[in-house]
Amino acid sequence: MATTELSALKSAINHLKDGLMNFNSKEDGSYTKEELLKCQAFVVFSHAEVEVYLEKVSRKIMNCARKDWMDHSIYGRVTSALVAFRRQENVSVPEDPKICNKNNDINKIIEYSFKYQEEIISKNNGIKRSNLAQMIFPLGIFSSDLDESLLISLDNTGSKRGDIVHKGSSVSLRNIRDPFSGELLDIINLINEISVFDQKMIELFGIY
Image (cartoon, rainbow, N blue to C red; front, side, top):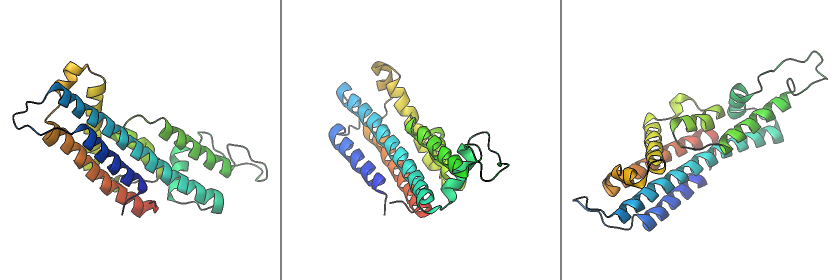
């Protein structure tokens, strides 16, 4: 079982693979510049699809908790974590429980936390562990919920994308490893790691 976001991610990666990695593997490494550029594009666009996946899953977890609170006043793991990590700096107990303001009205405090997290997700620009931490950790994730192998794969792919985008083509092409046994295999392994992560999110938050 997988979330709709993971299914969309896998479909997008397969589409990119079919459209860009449509050349033969060469044992002697004699790839043309055009083939290497296609491989570069595959890595960059795959990175973008993974980024979209992480943002959408984070937003889905948050929005489900937000709906539970607004509709049923259910204050669960996600809402608790958001108030802990994203609340306003100045929070106080009112002297008169009938007179509240934004700093001591629990509804306003919680709504501020959700809005703040929404801004963080919307402004995200990357897939490295630091990006994932900002998007997912304030939603109630424990460090034990994440595999180090996933974080390493995210960091590696994020760094590879940066090398490609922020360096001239003559430099970045030299950094491309074998398109199939190197770059494509890394993306495949990353998707496998994300699949494990996706299953964990289903178990923890009941999203699909």
